[in-house]
Length: 281
Image (cartoon, rainbow, N blue to C red):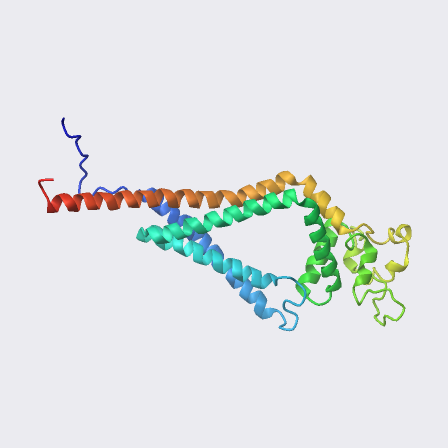
């Protein structure tokens, strides 16, 4: 039986495609630079923040979270950059595995959030109520709540009276605070042509019933408004999730293609080395 001819390749032939190699490098370089920007912003925000206020009430300080995410992105994309340039299988596999784990975790979080939507709603309520209690303790948290209440035209968790949970806005008779029975200014109804924001517009609003308070402030809570917004913007949220998933899938695909090409190149080199040392084989 005739032996099947073995394909011959020139000395300069390479299975590694420069297109795949440098596409993966550029892909990682972009995210590597983004990670450095995130770390810089996080460090700046952490340094500028008062030490005694840092992490006083948020489960995770936003500045610290930004730094952690930036560092993780830096390490992962560093593996991708060096692995693609140096054609290092170990670094490329590390990069691919990390991206796969992140993608699976995101997918699992989305599925669990959908399946256990009732429990998720309870957790959101707990977070909002805890944020109300610590409203004055952290400037980041205060700005976040004010932005949310203005954006969704809401006040408190279930209603505006939830602000009584805060020690400054508490309605008990023995509360000495000047803000007793008040709500933050972000609860107030503002006129479109209002030039100066009246930060005291929520004074004494908790003493009023829903109808009377509704003339001056938003009386509906933010939990229902947030849930309704999520239900009404499922396509937008799905698009954002897809936008986050596509770069990860592209990175996984390119890294796996490059890994296979490098392995083929290694096999070719072994084959050539073997036939140089044994010309009769």
